[in-house]
Image 1 (spheres, rainbow, N blue to C red):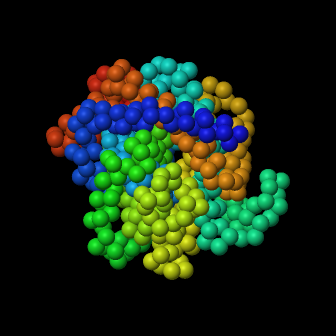
Image 2 (spheres, rainbow, N blue to C red):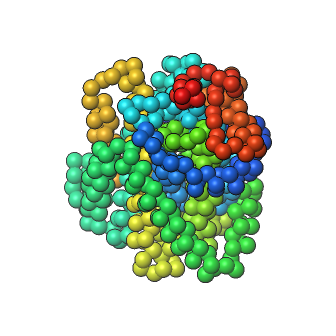
Image 3 (cartoon, rainbow, N blue to C red):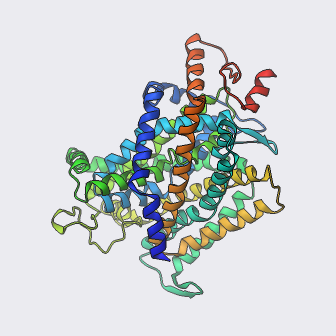
Length: 493
């Protein structure tokens, strides 16, 4: 089974997907005239505006929900894995995919807003919705919806829960083993698996409003605390920063782990972390109450910066400055770092050891706590994404108990993920991310070629901004955008 998972993972994450992600990001950057740079001040302004409604969440809540999906184990264990398997230069390629991916995030999130619907009193939207409405390909939309339910409901939750279990087990110094039907398992992992499952059940049975209220408080607070801790470590080693930057840039083009490895792992972990192009962000974007679809597209582009350029960079600098890493698969003379090769790069061990080297005795527990909140909020985001796609499926087949089945499946996946091996969990998660990225990027490229709705929305928004309108308006018919039923009815009213 392990060999099969590895084989499928290698097929999904071939060099073709790596360059598709980079190529799509560059293409949309050019088509939007680098909206991620030009409209950066507007992104900041929009975070302070917006409001919630009976059907939708506020702009900031939508950012928090999407960040809860983007900011997770990929920011701690994922960065460590990128460095461990790809070398320090992989960090540079994570930056590249974040910068280019911000334009992709704008496009997919704007599409999510344009083609959203009202379902049972709340806004719903995402790739399945815009693939059906913009392309008219319902079979493709259904395929994406089913894939996303499987990935976010079964494959990806195990990665987040696994990171929590590993972090707590490492912080506890390795708890005693307990015999279970799936083999001997650490007691710490069993306890955390049960705790995460119970806490997750309490929130996901409360709906998207409860998820939004929880994440808008927890995600910003934990992210700020984590970045401050990283800045303290960097500040204590300030003289080493220029050398670390040169190490990252030098290894990006003369890599110790091979060019394919450094680019591949940088892009793979970059996409896993910031989710630009993966198709998850548009679900939260569609739930927001905004005056114009482009507003949420800009906010979601900013969330990519927060995830990768801020939080992932903080992790990378902590690991590299303290030398708490090793690069696998290369000669020991050039492997870098100070750790033995027995440390699993897929675990949060690199990050915990980096913090512990400065804050003796508290590094492991602190990273475990940060990882718990990051990964837990990501689990909530995965549930919401899977729920939205189940809602899409129910538009055609309203099967009783489908939502309950999803909740139980995700809870089971989270518990099992907390106790299983890290390598298997990550491989399954990579397959889920990769298949979604393939389908979504191809979808948004085809939509661009067919009608360019996200570009039309951007130009319309910028024109209204230049005109200094008191309140933005979106008229899809005037822009030649078809099947945007929600916005057509709203404009008429």
